[in-house]
Amino acid sequence: MIDWMNRLLRFCFLIAYAGACFGQQHPYELKVTSENDNYCLNLHDGYYTNGLFITMNYMPVGLNNRIPETSSLSKIVGQYQVGQMIFTPEFVTPKTTKDLIDRPFAGYLYVQKGLTFFYKKGHVLKTTVSVGTIGGNSLAEQTQIFIHRTFDLLRPKGWNYQIHNEVGINLQGQYWRELLPASWRKSRFDLHSLAQMTVGNTFTNASAGLLFRAGRFAQPNQSSWFDARVGRELSGETTELYVFVQPAYQYQFYNATVQGGYFTNDAGAILSPLRHWGYRHDMGLVFSPPRWTFQIVYTYKQREAAIMRHNEQFVGLTMAYRFGR
Image (tube, rainbow, N blue to C red; front, side, top):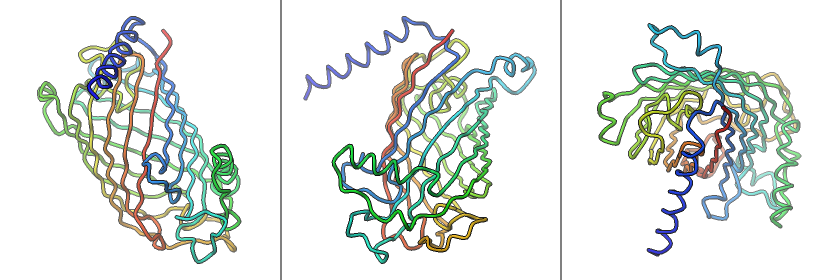
């Protein structure tokens, strides 16, 4: 066991050293995130069963050059993202019948554009607009069949009851407010409040929570947590290694992956009433040397659909690489 831990520490050191040798000023970051309930090693395949997100973070030079010295802003980071989310009942085996469907079959495929604004006091505002589709056009059924065939799993059944096609436009704002003085970062922990609002015909919700981090981390406008390790040369902590917890409560006004399309007749699909209040807890570990970011996140989430029999859990794995001059 000790030998294994020593090897892991040497590996982390080599990654950090290699990243430092390439320099610390990289205007682009390619990030890939995979989320799946099977990563929990519980042999479960249901509810929010798979998510894949490919993100390009970049430093918009024009916008940053127009920030005056007297501005409360310190930095702006841009983002493009394409993603797919797959939702199913608890059971998707060939024996699945209508009475066993305790969460609608649904997929969501989208593209997104975002801007994140970093303030000198440590606060962060992220805004995004996304355009996507639910239903068969989301390719969720094809993706799940491909995954099951690749890993020699049972072919999923029940997608003929999935939510029907509808294009959606969604706007989202997230705001983190630093609650501790900047000088407390030397104590190796920080605390932010989090508020989030989403408005659209696919998702409409609001949530509030806290973010607590402990370990080695950079200030917010240079930290991997906020996708800020692009652009200007990093100062202070050039390698981050920290744990985090982020509990939050959410109120859902509308969720098309549960209730069906807002403007669509979903006759034939199996839908569900919405559970409006829900609790979510994220916790994980982040390691981010100058060129790379590695992140693992465990998420526990209360039921979204009223007909769901259980709460859900899943794990997200992220790898990012920064490049360019």
